[in-house]
Image 1 (cartoon, rainbow, N blue to C red):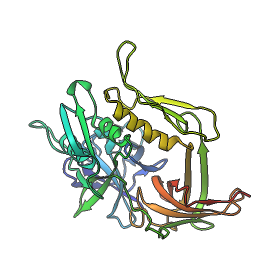
Image 2 (image 1 turned 60 degrees about the vertical axis):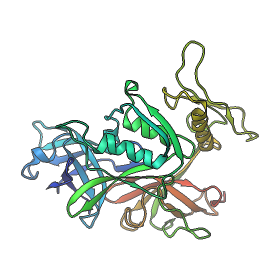
Image 3 (image 1 turned 135 degrees about the vertical axis):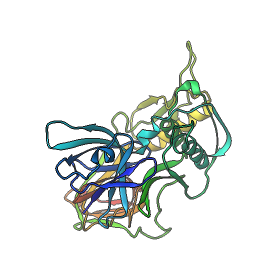
Image 4 (image 1 turned 45 degrees about the horizontal axis):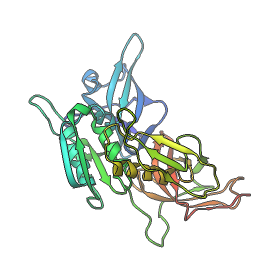
Length: 366
């Protein structure tokens, strides 16, 4: 059974067990963005000291696996409501929301490996205190699989750029870093850890299938394969822009997918208003071109949590898994390697969102 504890956000010390806490919806984890959750705690069975253990922005609530020790998910309490009713209502947001409340100062990086650049920014602006009497959070940064390609980046205090925005900009570059914040338990001190890499998660061994499998019939109770070319999901003529003056503005060259059997479909957006270098805009545009070339294609599964491979033990965000699914629409089977790009969790279900490897997938329509 899933359980929650309250931890001091500044130290990671466990403050209280929240045995009767309940939540609606699901716990969510995705790359590089905040997720929210609302929970309810009955006053009658709340632990002694619940006022301290639910104080907004001084505690995090961490969900533990069935073993009562391994953290699966955690978030900072952002809002608390009490009234004449029997419950304490709490709103929560994951650590990336904290990143969006930290602003960068003047910084210049020259040929800094991108994963170390992420580490530099997070440690300076989220982990370490920047003034007497002020505090950061005890966040460990774990660089995985090498330091990454060298990047030149400049930030100015006057731009009012948040740490989250800077990290998302880096991830938006062609070949940019991937990062996710998870939690770890070291002798009842529970703290966040940011994993950063060119490619988060475990790839399938060359020439072999992933060891983790989701199947229907099997542990999977529902599956939806969605293909979309709507606005924001697909285009074959991409341009990245930035702010300019008068009739001049920095913009990338057109990044086009040729002879794809579709009419011209354009997509223009501004990855950041502070970008002045055309090669940087070109890099953003090439990354979106790769993602949009054939539109969005995602496979969402819902599986029995007690029958499926165990989240956090057998697989985690970024890992390759194998799917083997049969349905009326997939009479010949939908099988192949897929990568976990997000997940949701309830007491009884686990729902990975998967990006299929189009080169390995077999999908035979009836």
